[in-house]
Length: 338
Image (cartoon, rainbow, N blue to C red; front, top):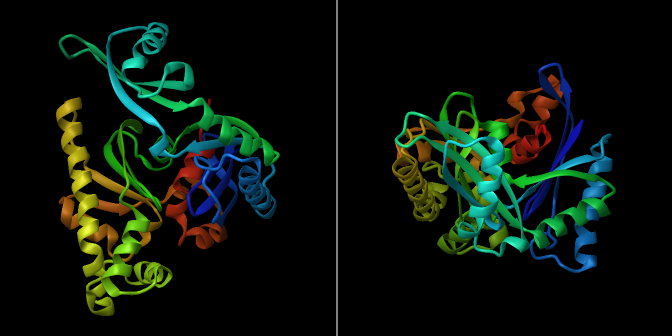
């Protein structure tokens, strides 16, 4: 059994799964709102203990039985890059990454924790090449997250970027798709090929920006704007389309960034364009979000359901259906196998 914990800016999500033959079944899940400092800015012991206290309570209420925990790092705090090497063995790639990493990440190597993953080996190119995903994060940040899990009475077994978890939870096999996660403070964009993360980007326009836009457009308080955003979204029929009008410009900015990501991926990676887009995160549940993006991008856009990859009781499926997109990262973390 494994527990996946996603510490967001406004909520903490938890999912526990258990191996069941060739698949996994859902053992426990839970979500709680959180208004304290996020781990990347929380430094004092008291600030970290606030987060661990919330996790302890969530673990107890969800009746989690395992202590083995996989945790995600915010994409905005991670440095990811696809690096091309000649055709090499796995051990040669590991050595090459160690020597080459310095030119690709903006922090000193001795202050970073590095991970790499071979995406694919292309023998039909001239010269043949190996595509490797290089990921780096600061040791200080990873240490802070590890401390939170330790203070929560759990055991940290692995830590990875959010988009790796999203791909594991939502990406279909044998397809190239874009996955977009709308968080509170950032929108994270991934492109997955054959269920492997091959491109990542994080932009600061996200849920909070949508709420501010509604607040300014309608002249209302942020709390009310948040409710209007969730209730009316991008529907032209609701509230005379006033919320939609407030959201249109900022939503179009996000779709433009998605188009840029696709264009860069096709040209830089010499790969095929994603055939569809899968949405995750709170904003993905906003009325007409998927249909609006379908029109703006000219391709199929759907809201992802991470529980579709799990064996789950009908009762749990029903109770989680309205919140599924919020759990995507936590599900992906719980499915990680070493």
